[in-house]
Length: 605
Image 1 (cartoon, helix red, strand yellow):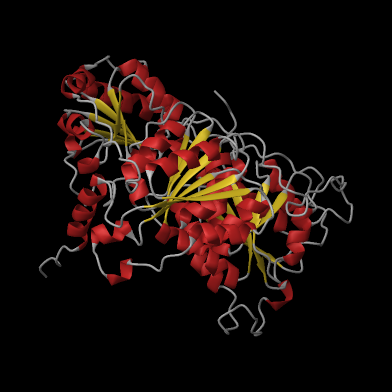
Image 2 (cartoon, one colour):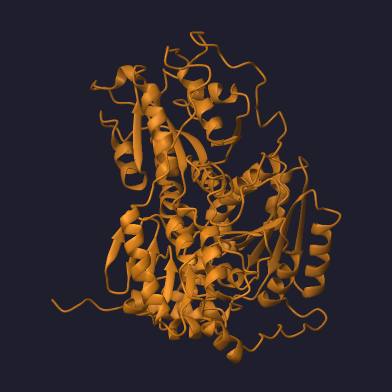
């Protein structure tokens, strides 16, 4: 057994990308200076923190400068192998750390005290919901100001510096306030190692007068982390296996479904191993898309209750036993609590426990250990997949467009499907892109990311910046609605400065379409922008950028040909004009059911 925890990709099945995007020296600053020797005056807190980040796999830190973090930024820039990516705002810096963690296994951002910290907080909460180790570093007040009655700028005007810390406590798994050198080494190391062990964000505040100070504990080469893996309780594992095998082997048509916690459990390969050994029909929850190969021989598609892939829900919900690996059951994934699953038919495998039917539950069991061992014991049963093959009818293609006919969204995604390869990745923004991108069939190696649990509109712009910076071997295709884009558009300029080559499809349908289908009102209509003109203004003749606006299939085809051919080395921004009522049928169904769940009357008192 491997005795260390790797710091590569946290994706369930996909391998980690290697390397980091090369950015121009004028923007991404690196240093070739030698690291400080032990006892050297340059063996500082700032450099120690920087070296720790590099050691765990961070090559790029997303930052917004402020007076409390400027000295710290100097020391991060000076560290060989670490590049500073300046973002337009703290929210996007946090989203970028989220996206980077999806590609690399860990991400980091640096902001200033309170005004920066509270701005980045929303992004860190999203990373917490998605089990992503994002290290949020804040430049804090001068160490001499702690314990005084002084009122500082960037605060709410009270002599209490703990407001920011208290806000971060619910959305991080560990908080460290570094305001003296004696325990700074221990605080930094504990925070970073906790982020990796728990796969959750952490908060590190560093007093602004400390980054440049040396201390004997800041050695030249920090002792590498040795994070012992969590081990299964052998007796509990055996008991869980016996109960599960007995439960599944008596079933006539069992199935298995991948959930999003496969990523944090690093159990994607074990899930594949079980699917191959068991012969079960395989589906994935929407937030687990991309975590298991969609080329598995008995893969049905996405299980999402009433808006599942065709014939998938019928097979899953009619099964007499289903194994869910790492699921999250919430109002969105259950389509307003309308899914037809029964607890007494389910084996629910979470990262550290297993529940069989209505009980018992077995704790201290690691998901990867359990699934791998179950693959060697369970009886092979292909009945559910055979039933699927009997009822399956291939989906039709969208109706052909006439020359010059206004472009339909289903035609757009027909062409996006043809663009996908093992060298690409898909990023779906909150909105109708959730549903349209779920229908894409991913080839082996194709990445896929979206934020379902938190569902913060605008997430994808910053996350695209971070993911593309970390996944250098892939060209990312992002599908973003106009409403979401207006929230975080600024950091397209940062993508240009970093010479990224992503393709952004901006779907302009005049408003918050997903919210229209949940509950319509005038607040869902937004001011139309000249989106290609905006990106051209950001480009301003600096860097490689190409934009296009398309209204029909002929223009879309020409734009894709250009983006994947002549302009393949450019950031490509394609604005797609769509009718405001052109939505997927899945969104119509999902929106109605979520609306019904949201509008339930209060229970009688």
